[in-house]
Image (cartoon, rainbow over all chains, first blue to last red; front, top):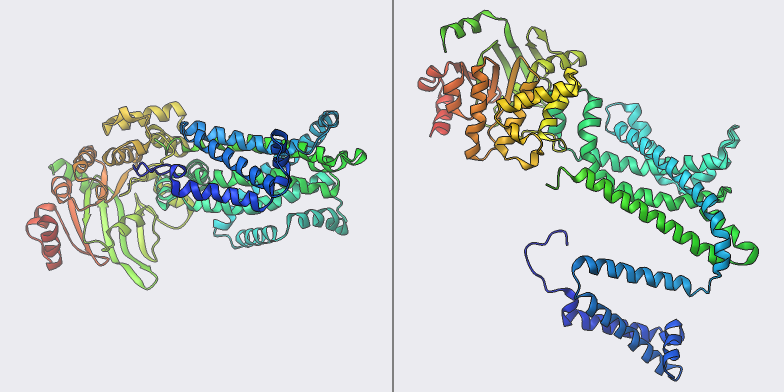
Length: 322
Length: 255
């Protein structure tokens, strides 16, 4: 808990009034949805001969519930950090088990993963990195324009955020790729993707940057201006470094989201990760192998961005957390 | 006030000259025909009830507040809304705020050194050296590597004074510099201000610290409802106030 209030609350899950209904609900849910029919049921029947139908459902539900209860019992006895990591790991293992249950051909994945990474991942990274850089510049310009006293700049910025937040990203990609040629300007697929992602995310981030800049008290401007500092210097040396604390967390969200939205660019035939994941499996009907592989690659990239965000946050918090 | 000091005050060109100043917030008039001249080396204290326009008045001097009518001259330069003029005047006028307004993301040393580099064009080494010199003058050099949030209010305000004075301005404006401080920290800040006054700095101080006014001021100004009601040297101002409003105010603040 971020704010502890100096009270030792008994842990929720050690209270009967919490864990009895919780485990009952899990048991009832599993029974109701006839969990004996699925993978858990097969697992139970592998261990002991139980008649199919209602008995199997009951035994399966009871086993899973007992497992969850035992897990809680064990985890609650660990220190906080270990609890977090253990639970994270268990959930990750469950997801991997879920993927494993698809009866994947690892030989096929092994054959294709090299191409998925060298072509798909690199293209995705390239498009995302370029879009992140351009979107950040657009957002900064948009925010400054919105806060300026220049009517033209404000008008452009307001229209920009309204239009590009208002249209589906997919539509923007089509508009640039198929619409601009009507004016005689043919744009290639990759530049189309970068342009659409930058414009769309720049529009969302404009609002984040604006709110961040506005969160800095007036006195900071007054002090810096009274010292004779120029407006640009005040913005870059005094205001923006302080607004970063407010700007970084939602911007990290945007970057992670953009990484995955870059998959929309596959509709105009860019050979990025999503496109290859859809097409590489087609010839041998191994769609799910490619989908699972691509999913895990996306997830790993997001984790990298998460860690990066955390580092940057710590950096900009250093003056405030003392 | 020594006679030599008095002669110096009289001789020089006014540091600040305000004439016929009027200011409105919408329909509300906050400054009424203010005329005021601050001589070089003069220490002026402005007091008055809250909302009397005293802070607004000194904030117009370095253009943190605009005004609709009248004229302000700083060191002979007429204040306009032209960027070059405003920045020229701000280079000559230092300011200390009630809420300190230190930059929380910079260390104490960087707070003082950054403006020196950006505005005065000093090299990083020169800026650091000068910043340390002024931090020593406010008796706080050992806190140079700390961040503002790690300092007490009194220490923060002393850093703010060092930051402003390090720019070597011709005039210092103080906008209620001790009003946000815990009582036990008021003295350390006032001591620094007294030392600054002893060095001959021209000062315009908005404050409720009447002890400081008695000890340091050459002239005390009393404002109410946007008007200068009364002014004079502290000896006559405190012992024989002419207006009823001044008397009422002094009774409130002097107990």
